[in-house]
Length: 91
Image 1: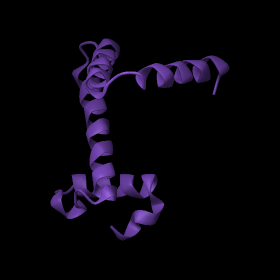
Image 2: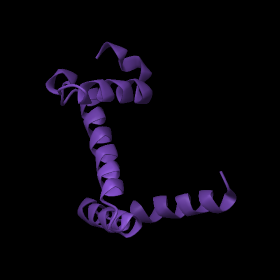
Image 3: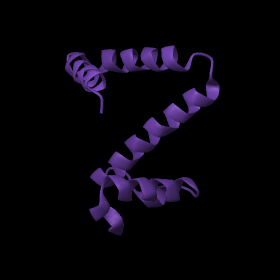
Image 4: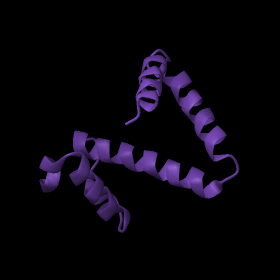
């Protein structure tokens, strides 16, 4: 990772953590829209990535069950769970 990239990530980390949750959500949505512009596919891909991440975290935490999801999404979630938490293969 380049030094400039690392510095930018540190700055992002520092300032994003200063925002209350609702403002953080608004800031991230604005940033995403600024980057994707009118590209609906890019927006869909980012949305899918975030939704999948949250669902995986909920399944790992036990607040949701993998069985509650239909295929092919269930298989995708299972694959992501195994990447994020290799010990969760039994879920």
